[in-house]
Image (cartoon, rainbow over all chains, first blue to last red; front, side, top):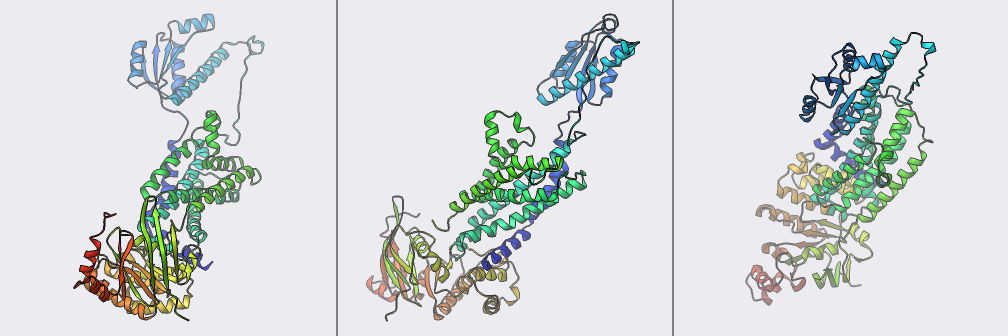
Amino acid sequence: MRTLRFLLQKEFKQVFRDPAILRIIFMMPIIQLLVLPWAADYEVKNIKLAIVDHDHSDYSRQFISKVTASGYFQLDQYTTSYNKAVEEVEKENADIVVEIPVHFEKDLVKESKAPLFMAVNAINGVKAVLGASYLQSIVQDYNNEIRQQWMQLPRFSPQTTIEITSSNWFNPLMDYKLFMVPGILVLLVTMVGSFLAALNIVKEKEVGTIEQINVTPIKKYQFILGKLIPFWVLGLLILTIGLAISLIVYGIHPAGSFLTIYAFAAVYLLVVLGLGLLISTYCNTQQQAMLISFFLMMIFILLGGLYTPIESMPQWAQWIAKFNPVSYFIEVMRRVVLKGSSLADIAPQIGIILLFAFVLNGWATWNYRKRS
Amino acid sequence: MTEQPIIYTEHLTKRFGDFTAVDAISFEVQKGEIFGFLGANGAGKTTAMRMLCGLSLPTSGKATIAGFDVYKQTEKIKQNIGYMSQKFSLYEDLTIKENIRFYAGIYGKSDAFIKDKTAQLLQQLNLEAEGDKLVGSLPLGLKQKLAFSVAVFHEPQIVFLDEPTGGVDPVTRREFWNMIYEAATAGITIFVTTHYMDEAEYCNRISIMVDGKIEALDTPAGLKETYNAATMDDVFLQLARKATRSDA
């Protein structure tokens, strides 16, 4: 116990004396949380539109002003030549081409129906799909308006329409920041925890101090605890900074309790640190440790459900995601923050994470040798 | 009761795959001796020393350190030895006092012991005013003296020094050896590797390793007589030239 106290004193002194680590601890969460949530917004805006109007009627103008008034579209081109519009798409100046045919107004009035043609540049898939669906709903809306204008006696209207109204549970305004901020916070805790722990131990190998430690009577578990505890505390500190930023800057009040978040994070950090420890036992230089950490982080992020839902991944990728600790924390964070899940609700995830912690730390301890 | 040798090895061997780094070495070191462990680069000195410190498991052979077996009682051995490696191994981002406190603490020394002895040590090294300076800011010679002081701070029975004076100026080397003599007078056995032949003369007995084997073991005077040489340099060159192993 006394040995551990000396180890902890040493580690904390070193951490707080290292300006680089302090910068990482304080600046990384602040910058990432202030910048990323604004950029990682799924809502597609500023879709550039090229409209080919062959009709030049009242209705076509009304339609165009309705589209541009929606706020999602920017009118880039208003032309009468379809070829010219396509050229704009090729030059990346336009994302969607809408062609209003000749007699659009006439057909609409006389025959109660008129075609519209829409061509979508699908190079950016997300933008294409969302843009097209926005535009479709605007057309639908416009259609209903016209219909209402014409109907003298709506009660006897022979045409029935089904209107779907939806309500978004847990995130009524569909605010992406509510969804992204907790996820980004998870990544922060993961990165800082595993990187710092791995680099710290590998640095002792590089400098040679670990050899000196190995000739002392320090026990393996004491050394490992001496490394894990400081970074566990730092991880919780970063989580706290992150939660404070999301509260102050984004006004995110978790629907559930902070206690639930901390309880899960406390277990989760054991996994992260175990991973860092494991990396360090396989690496001899900080460069190696850094590269391996980056490689793992890429997988963790892209298969973690932060940007894309895991459920829509192919089956094999979903299996990989099951072995990705990050995916569990992201899921838990979102549930607690948005839905207010309690400790009992996330018990299965805690169980799985505990299992990860045992496996990774056990593996790392086994692989850390005091002698060759 | 005859005194047990403090270091005892018998056919101690370490192989890495096909390569025999240390080839069946046998020797004894008595308590309080300054034992010089010489050899060219790659002769196997560091590997042998690492086995004796419990850092590396021998492939075969026997060895006991302070009466403890190197296979089964490494933790006991570690409690009783000090070690100073080729690489400087104090924490450069901790102060002199913090380094002393840390290493003494993990050997289980009491706070009172640490406090008294730290004051005493800083006085010896003329560092009373600099106890709170970061070790990284000290000149090399002073760092090496400090590393030695830390290695013997917990009053071990034996201290292993692996090329402790590499890159250090002659004046500081002299001071360093004075410290070694002091420690030996206090009853600590010194096991030291070096490439400086003048330092070899300071030792009570010397072994010279060539290609993993101990080729000669005697007092400096005895060796010079056996090899009919005027200086230790000459003795070393005669033996080291036999080496077939290249620099490893």
